[in-house]
Length: 119
Image (cartoon, rainbow, N blue to C red; front, side, top):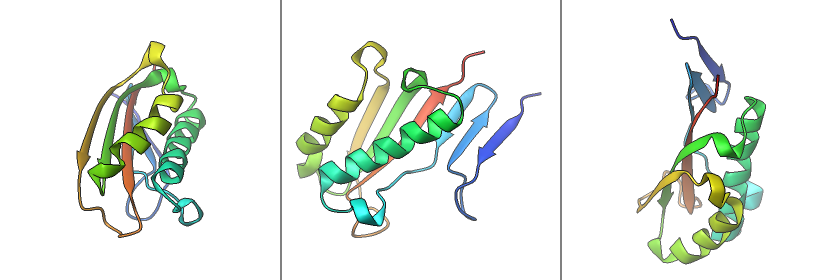
């Protein structure tokens, strides 16, 4: 039987869950001090995702899927500028990006990251 490990987030949701070899973050948004623009928010969220994976003993190369929600699809090129500098082309995950109304008007981006924990 697989063990489930949860890295605490809030009372509502874990920040990261490891279930067997599957790893997933909650939907990550920028911190208040990083709410300047889409570039800053994208950096903030990707940094959080990488830190969570690192805390679980994983690397960026263990990321298998990235789901991105943008409040405004006009931010797609600027977001991609930051994402492309962050992602390792040798271990690029699959990715989806859609426009969506986010939970707070200050959130420009939300990202959920999925991965695989090697044996």
